[in-house]
Image 1: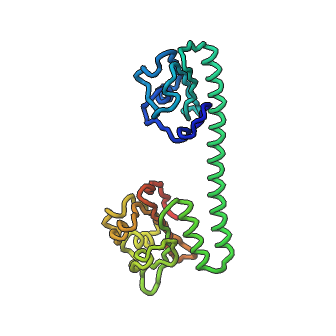
Image 2 (image 1 turned 120 degrees about the horizontal axis):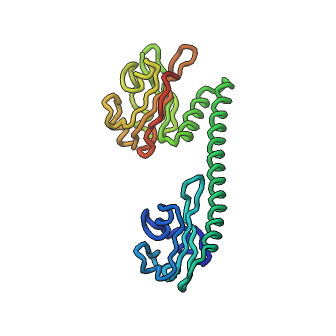
Image 3 (image 1 turned 45 degrees about the vertical axis):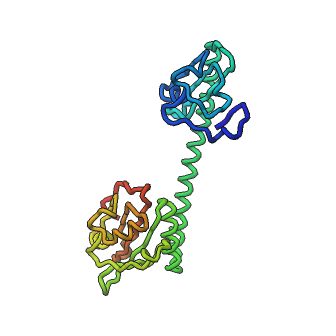
Length: 259
């Protein structure tokens, strides 16, 4: 990620797979590694596709610790044989410790920023609901921000038609005609219909194989996998909000007993 020797073709692009090279040995053992000569003959050596470091004789490698975990490795290399003194190892370890503190601070900042985004998202939803205006716009906002918050491909709100006793999609950010135009769901049938009756949240790991999900073919075509269905109960009237993440974002959340 950084190098004193300027070779932009390598920085940020050259990689080591897990277990390869001196760096991974240092990371896995969480302790300094000292090789004073013939580093390129060491069994732990891994060439980096012609990088200048491949020609160095000696290497001192120290782990960068952040919050008790290894965040990276810092290396010092010499072209000739070099006997690294204990003081040199200690100095590099101090540098790595300071760098690890910076990494920890950056991680905390990233978490704080993510939480702030979540709070802002929920606040936007709350302000829209409290306003009591433009119900269609409110529902479209809800599905959009919920999809963004969960990182899901599709989020929908389904409302109960009391006369027909079925659920119909009233808002979704999905652009898929097949999904938007799918048939309404009778109460008590499919996953959504059961959730609307029981008023209990349901998490499904794979809707493409779940016999209780009616639209498995649409799910396969749209690349959907998991589903989280949550009942919405307002003044005794139920409708349904649910989100279906993409295949790599399977829903594993622990569900509350009611919502």
